[in-house]
Length: 336
Image (tube, rainbow, N blue to C red):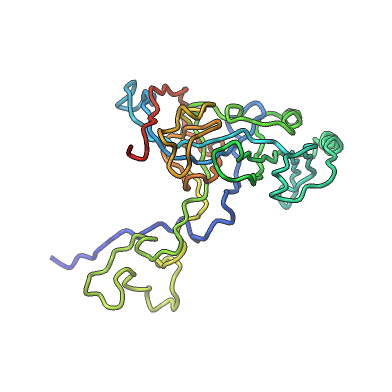
């Protein structure tokens, strides 16, 4: 038998390089899908991660061996108070990408918005909306400027997050009438999503600081008798090219990255937070006080972090109905 060369898969994925820190604590959505939406609607929503629990539900995936039986599912609870639509922004398409044509703001935005930026003295909402109406043939898409209301959630912050949410479905004329009616009003999760549908979840992951290659990439710990280092890599690469290649596992920032998880199913949208709050409250969060969304499985980020949800970019082919949830666990998470 001749010598057989050892083959081993690469430790860690290069798909997420560079592993830098996120620009800010809440994510930016760069792509808004258009399919599956007929009437004008907002394509996303946001909320604060409260924690996890589990539910008993009837399995409704037709191909599952447990179809029709009760199963246990881990769920993430996201507290999602209504968002306030402070502004409407119209975009035109140019050879250099989308450019803002104009934007209209509500007359009396909340005082907490001053914590984010200085508000102008006067808002000409009517003039701006009139300008939009006159230039509907030039407008390619509408986005609303949405503001969170953290005072309604159980987190100790007052400064809201401000972000854009694209409007999908219908014609430009229909979208204009839709956003015109939304300006200055609040929107709840039920007006955007429905129970049983799939969403993409975008958030900034839990930060872990500077970590070595063993934890950051999962490389093997070298034998005890190794010289110089054990929790490192054995070689930095070949002599030629005469540099350390980007694909070599090195120490560096781990966590606090923007991540998108596709096709997470909404199991329930509820108004009464007591239905899902465990005895003693969620760890490091407390009770859920406002509207909540139950999402199947886990979600990136620690508790209290803002999580954004949007219509799915690559939805599954089979659509599922509203789930039948039999029981939501509210047992204490503190072992009491």
